Length: 208
Image 1 (cartoon, rainbow, N blue to C red):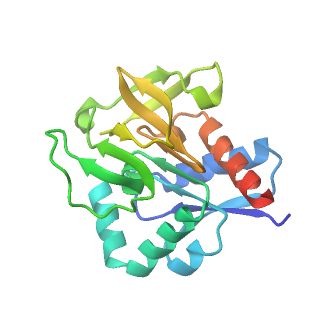
Image 2: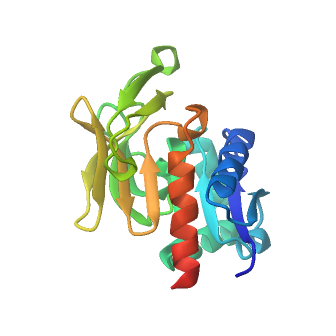
């Protein structure tokens, strides 16, 4: 098997932190490969999996809407089963619909590949950011330290979406096939289990 190539969509967000967490996951699983920044359609075609990091979802959506080839490349690869991890704003961008805290639907550009509807800033503003321990079904019994920064929550899930974790009755982690979405920032937790799971999904996808 060729070396894995995992792309970090480098439009905004914690790019270096995601590269570091992915590299550690590859090492942990004894997988040959690397994490690289991707910004252009031709780069999207060369990767085996992708991380859509946090940031400002409106800005990310605007960048994608101005670059139709990039939007189409990412959307096509995800629709065809490429494994992905979308964190915070990255999860919003993958969703089918996004609403603000007052319930109004946002008009921002979305990929629409993840059958979820999300509420932006569901836990408050930047100043109200926080950390807390979460029970995540996908990761086993040990709790995961969730870092929430202007975090969204999932308001509705489609029939093929698994709910992986909740906080105060709000859905904060989901999975649909090879795509995982989190309201929080796993790359800031010091715990690489989400990135490890992504690498496992990528290796399974390549084998199949």
